[in-house]
Length: 79
Image (tube, rainbow, N blue to C red; front, side, top):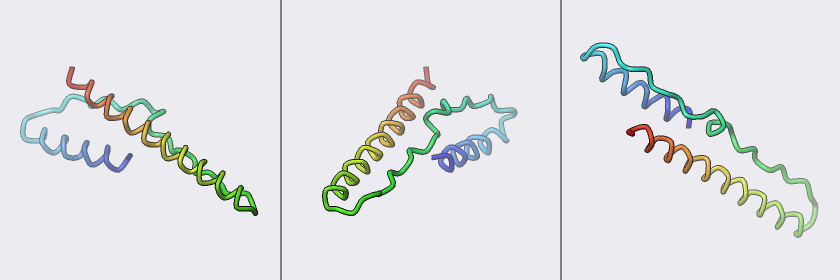
């Protein structure tokens, strides 16, 4: 995500070079830029493996919610 933000900033800064100084771009809230920790498998049974799959799904869900929040934040920047 950080790479995407840096690439976008570089593109925007390049476009401003021909037209004078660019306004400073606000950054997204830092909570949206933090990694969602990957669950660590600590088990030995099929039940443990099934629980780990559910943990992985929850981590993916949290990550997708962060990305949705970033899209909402970005959409609000045009106001």
